[in-house]
Image 1 (cartoon, rainbow, N blue to C red):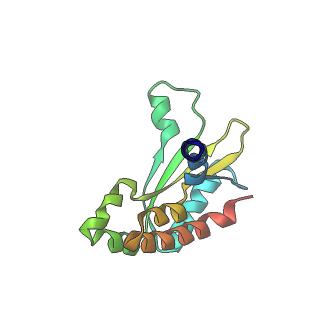
Image 2: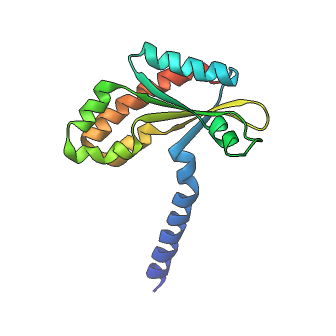
Length: 154
């Protein structure tokens, strides 16, 4: 009886730990050493210099202000794509499940304290969750994204 009780308590505690820690593990947030617009421009420039494409930069501040939310601070999301990595995933029907998180996105926002932050999904962790070809390709994506962001963070 004691073993079963201990097992149940262990499972519950593990569930709580995963619930609390997962958001902190899945999303990484860094403080940029540059201003908001400089950070957005630098990420775009770094991506293009590494043969990535930047098909869209979403200006969420503008979108939300147009909807009447005048107090929204600057927020932009850069959609970035490396065509060869994308092809190596999308050529396999079984791997197309990750289209829901494609293309890669990097968020840039101005915090209430005036500082600029960079937010990204933890692709290294995500890659390990999928395994196989997806893990192989996404682990390379993680390294390249880190190289784009690293020069900008404090």
